[in-house]
Image (cartoon, rainbow, N blue to C red; front, side):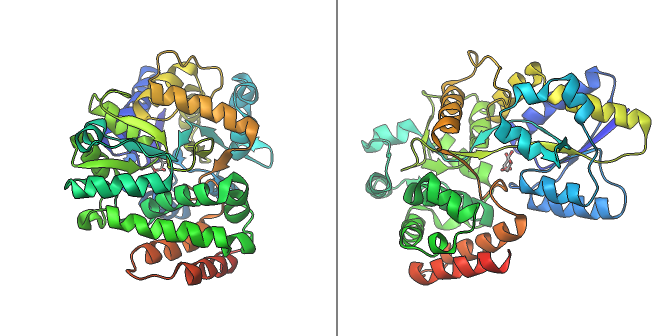
Length: 394
Ligand SMILES: OC[C@H]1O[C@H](O)[C@H](O)[C@@H](O)[C@@H]1O
């Protein structure tokens, strides 16, 4: 049969990872129809998917994540994967926090592909050695180090001026200031007092200060172009999920030698998760439905989980995959994922659709990116604005 897969994995590391799935499906005699829609974070892809689905011509599978899975399932577009899930013992090999996200009313409608950690700081050690500074672990240390790097004529933080990237940096600062408990209160439970409270004002104040360490050409820059700046030593650091590691790997860079990965400042002990998944659409073509089920089965097998996640920069979503052949950043991520699942430090990424609805996320993005791009913005007023914007989308 044929499987058409809609996704936004077009950067070097992302495309390489997606190639693994294409190959494995073709080995099973299926035809792979790639429907890649460029644009990190996936906003453009979701717009195209809506058009296709509403016109009654959805792809077999689409990269739909977190809360969006519930919204698409509620509309009746998604097919039931329980038979494959039972055969393949998904409930046994998946952490409950993951299987719950993949189910609608208790039935599997999507297959998880990986677990990305979002709260990472990527570091070029050669730049740090040249300037003679240490890797920062708190925001105060970050600003101190960034001043010295800037004085040495190097861009301290590589960044892409796009709302989802601004939100990715903001959520790391918010997690540092709020801690996992209040982070969840704010972005999952929409607690108005926390959203407009003193800790949020502090987070916004620090977030705005980061602007001083980003170069003026950042506007509209794609995330992987920013990662390239760190790889080349044009910039010292980047705050981004570990899909960035996919770019280091694609450039044959070695973790711990050519680059370092540390938790984003102030978020040691916490893990912001972002789980990619493919949701399966109802089809009325037997051969393609068989191919669709083979796709779901293939994705959660240990072989795919190992090869794909090494290229993608994420960690396997199955808890029983041997991590021995993964790099040190992946091993650190898996260790932190397991530890934080136990100690309350594991939180869903707001910027990547894991914490709240796309309507609330959209409101937060607007407030945050306007604030970040306004010279003398007022953190106090913005915290109040944030709370009322969230309220308006509930
Ligand atoms: O495109 C950049 C990133 O966007 C999203 O966060 C996806 O979950 C991730 O897989 C992708 O690499």
